[in-house]
Amino acid sequence: MGGSSTQSKKQVWMDKIRQDAALEQARALIEKVNDNCFDKCVPKPGKELSKGETTCINLCMEKYMSAWNVVSRKYIERIQSRDAI
Amino acid sequence: MDSSNGSDLSDLSDISANDKKELQNFVTNEAQKAKIQTSMHTHIPPPPRPRAHLLTNSVCFFFSQAVHYLTDKCWKNCITSKISSGQMDSYEKPCMENCVDRYIDAQMTVLKHLEQLRGSM
Image (tube, one colour):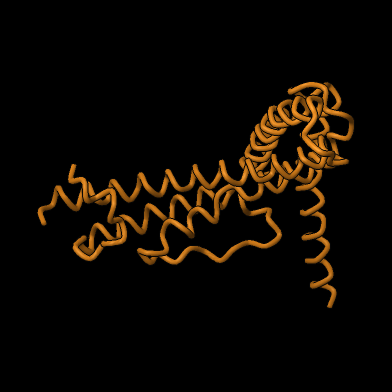
């Protein structure tokens, strides 16, 4: 095995780690969206998902993601201003 | 690039000691970055072991748990009315932001008080 080959192997590993981390992020977010939006939009599950419930879920999903962004921004801002802690 | 590289990630046997070290540092750094976002979480997971076959799992485990935790918590507190829009309204957004700040404040208050209690013992 030459040096360039282990080099690319290392790169593959790093990419894989980053990729896995991003995937895990998305997975966790979707899990939370399912959880919270189901509670919010389908309080009394009927025979099928109604039109209103479907609309609610779609809106809820967008709202949850923007809430996630707000929290993430705020949290990072707070963590970075060391004196505020 | 050799196509077998993508499929057989677990085989690190032929990587040099230097490269191994570099990879370990990379993982530590990534975990550190993630830890910033995790440090609030009540149950902080143990730091990742720099063992090759555990690398990916332990790094993943770290990522952004605090942000997920806080979004979940503050969502329950702040998004109380029926969902009628995909955006947060003028009450909800500041509520989410305050919620994050006050959660950290509360946590710090607990820690400070704990320190006081320990000092007086």
